[in-house]
Each structure stands twice: as structure tokens, then as C-alpha cells.
Length: 109
Image (cartoon, rainbow, N blue to C red):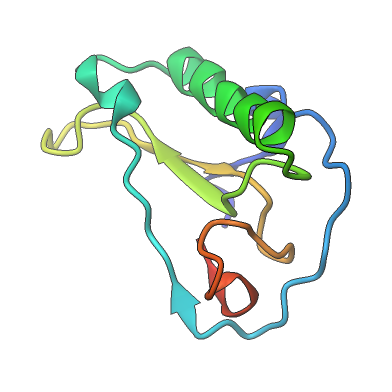
């Protein structure tokens, strides 16, 4: 998918380690992160800062190897048809996520 923004867009720190995700996966897990949505006008810079802060939190405060999500959707208000939401790569397609303990090895999340 060429519309998915890569990790350098949000200044990702290199993962400490990565584990291969067994494919194909059986599930897609969607998490709603509402902290940023209080501001109805969200720019790509806002999203990049927010996602970078998420990675920092999970790695430095929770002890994870990387951001826990495979992908993150961020952008303007999802109820606005003119919204410019973007998909950002977290761990990506091939790496095991840490988003849902019982589904990590069989899902993207």
C-alpha cells in the first residue's frame, strides 16, 4: 500500500528487537486512541509528535521493544467527510505486535 506513511515520517526510534509475525493472520484488531482527537484540527505534524510520544511511552516507561501497534490511523475528525486521515507504520506488516496479548501472534493491530 503506497499510502501508508513509513516510520521516518514520525521520527521513530529503531526497535530494540523484532519478532516475525506468522502469516497469514486471522484477525485485525482496531484500537481507538482518543487523546489527540480533542483537537478537531489535527495536522500530520501533530500526528507524528503523538505517535513518537506513544513509542517513547511504550519503550521507556512500559519496557516494550517498540511502539506496540502495527499501524496507527491519525488525522482530522473521522466524522468529517473531508478528513485527511493517514495510516502510519508502527511495527509494520511482518512484525509481531504487542497490542492485544492473546491475539498478538495471529493479528495485525
